[in-house]
Length: 173
Ligand SMILES: C[S@@+](CC[C@H](N)C(=O)[O-])C[C@H]1O[C@@H](n2cnc3c(N)ncnc32)[C@H](O)[C@@H]1O
Image (cartoon, rainbow, N blue to C red; front, side, top):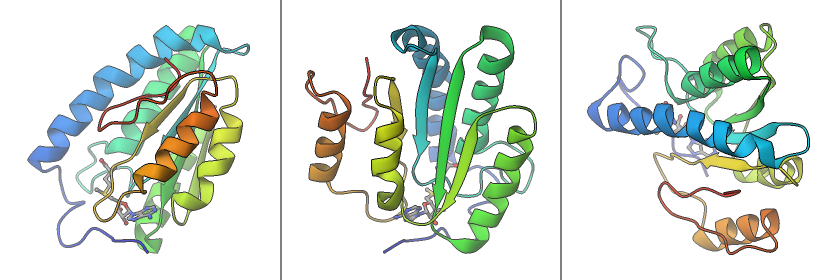
């Protein structure tokens, strides 16, 4: 069951999102730069499971566009593919998200927008990330995926390593 954003959420960025996005901006490039060499095809997989609209109404990038910008930079400058999956359950938000994702796809960024619950795409994203570093960005405004489900998913992605779930945890390192 999805819980959507309401009111003015997408008008412009509120303070918690300033911190959250700052972490994402700093951490995702480090992740891509340090770990892309661990996959045979210089690719890392990224899932924004609760992506929202991707961009605020004032034009500022939200989490999806922040990741897409990083992916675009890596694609053009470093020969590294950040393959992005962006999931949004709320239909209106999804429409806007899809436009943002499409605009980056046209520039050659490998990115997929999915309308629906994050749990519905998780297994296919994990399959896609087999042998590749995986970055999960899970930022719900309602219920998050159950911890057991996350542990199970991360254990499958890293069969020989202990999963490190956590608020800003990562897999693949
Ligand atoms: C906090 S907002 C996302 C903000 C976005 N990550 C950002 O930082 O720009 C959470 C979003 O998750 C969506 N959502 C809620 N439950 C969901 C689910 N089970 N699967 C996918 N999306 C969901 C909501 O509609 C909402 O747009």
